[in-house]
Length: 44
Image 1 (cartoon, one colour):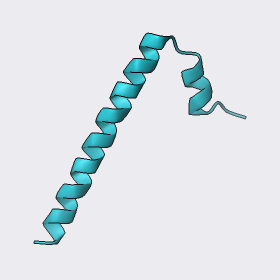
Image 2 (image 1 turned 60 degrees about the vertical axis):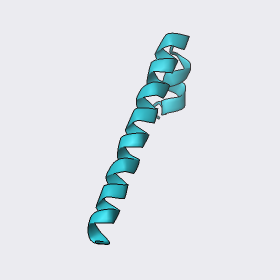
Image 3 (image 1 turned 90 degrees about the vertical axis):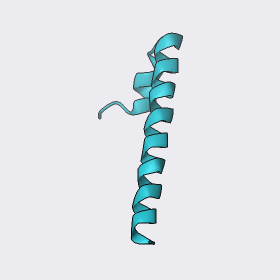
């Protein structure tokens, strides 16, 4: 059986964990923005 993301992140040091959290927040923000742009495009 393969590793899950929680297992991988558990092995990171605190600085690596912060970087992962920052990148995740950035990706979520970008995805939300893209979703909003697509929604606006189809509702105009």
